[in-house]
Image (tube, rainbow, N blue to C red; front, side, top):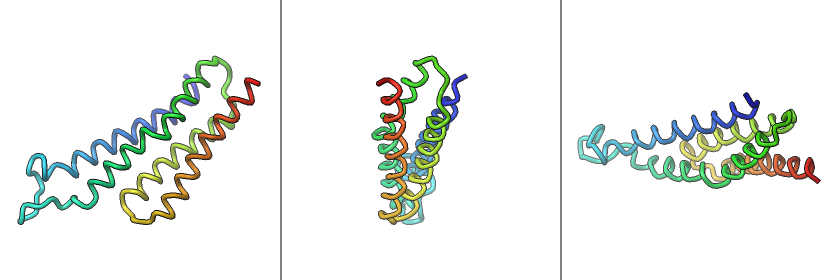
Length: 132
């Protein structure tokens, strides 16, 4: 099994957890489960953040997935740098989700995103350098 499957699967698990969290946050509105006494959704303020974060998981991460597929398709040993960068990306995505959903700290969110962005960009640079 490729050493890149585990970070890829970890990102899939993150997306799964976000879908579950979004379902729970929407439950008071959709099913009436967990509504406050006045009928409002106690998760109303966090639900849009979860939804936005889930959408974010299908934007820049697309380039991560493509890089992983290309690296695995080479059918050659994966450089340790690529494995480290994949983990930096995935751990960064988890942190980005936590910051985006549970805080309003846009500066911190931007810094965490930058780490994710640079990790994937570095994966691509290394991939291109190997094929020049």
